[in-house]
Image (cartoon, rainbow, N blue to C red):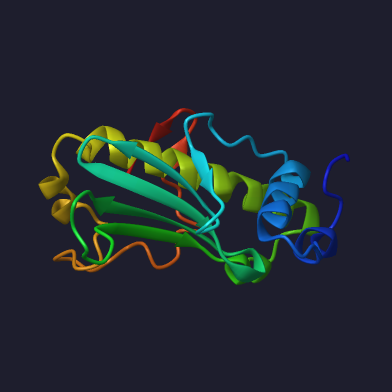
Length: 159
């Protein structure tokens, strides 16, 4: 179809099928989902598993996305969570073109963060409690809105 040209084009993707809308947004933003992430038609998210941990990258409404990690075999709330917020991008004072690019970067950042969590904790889920993205981290949860947080440079997550 081509590249996304304006914010309204991205936000107003009016399609009845949720998966179709998600895939169209990613296509317009030119975001490539890593091959090893599988899309769940039931839950409308991308998922991946490594040993003790599974992750979800979930598009929410109004341009918001989140990544969550869970320990396998438990029915607890997520062990790790980080989110990006479209409103944060809109309020950042950058141009519309820069907002679209930032949104693309943030979605990519969530997939990279998910992979990072699997690499770090896939063999030791108990260690997730020490991560700053654990909702009950001793110094406070840092994942509420990572839209403007610089944790990804090049090929490496660093926080």
